[in-house]
Length: 433
Image 1 (cartoon, rainbow, N blue to C red):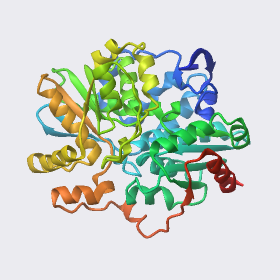
Image 2 (image 1 turned 45 degrees about the vertical axis):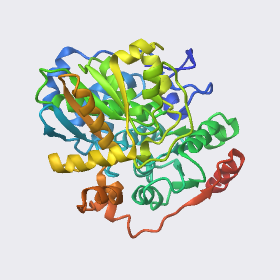
Image 3 (image 1 turned 90 degrees about the vertical axis):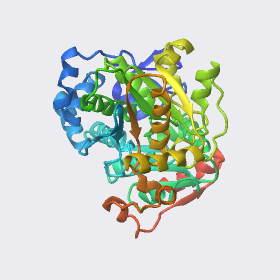
Image 4 (image 1 turned 60 degrees about the horizontal axis):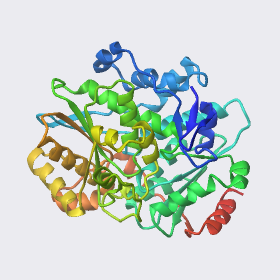
């Protein structure tokens, strides 16, 4: 399998190059040259398959020529060691719980797979890599834990200072060893801009072997397809069209879902569920893509004003607004509406939503009012990561899982950083020298 740049389809590389580079030199994003169709028999077997088994069969075409079958099977078995249960809240309404991994967020799927892929590529070489990643919340902790103590890999995580929850910050700043964190005086968009600028800085790329672990890296994105297949296999009432509602910020999750559909997964429709940063819902309404500065919300992992993966979605829909609209609907909600949904889910279903899942749930309920469908919304993070906000709404205490408890008594290891690129570059040299 070859991978092309969204800015230049003639520029193609192999999988290892795409994973190591993260971004092409022309500032595009890598996409698979072909999207394979899975055989019909695969979908009938889904209800009895485990996540590692699904992972092997779905990802195999994308790594052919780069990773032998026996190694890919082992990577999947090591990466996907946790469940992704489907909880039925009501008739035709399901929550896909993606927070049962080590950092209690859906980012564990992609981060753990990418860490093992990079480790595999580095195993028989002296190659050194620096993973540079921007996070608005959960990506940082998932990447930190996924790459912790991986040989020949340093990790530098940028996050907007004061704009992530305390638990999110603790998960990525208390590890040490090869994990370094920079608290940037700015927004997530500033963090993302610094990362993207670094990837076209030839001096840094060459000296540090830069690669990304955001969903801009194809090895982070592809594994996110797996839970769509897994969820579809667990849905009981498939007689009606199946719709997925996806809480969306940088749109890697939605891109992965559309890729899964292109591989043959019988998904009727997707919902792009956004908070006040409603860039893609606005595009679906107007036909114009207009990035703007991000707005701070209680669903902070979705506070993205210029979503990177939009260019991948455009490629998947042939740069046609009409095709995009045919398979994706957009909804956006305020913080007050998010809190209202958390309260309603507690009262009606005795179910605790986090702020991101609440937006996915509310968007799905709105869509179902005009369509007789079976709906699945993605619960992307454990409510405990937003404990103060959720407990204030529900009036009920949330038990703190063991992985979180372990971080509460550790010191945070944080380096302060400005949003100016020159200052960031100097800070990066100091960190890794």
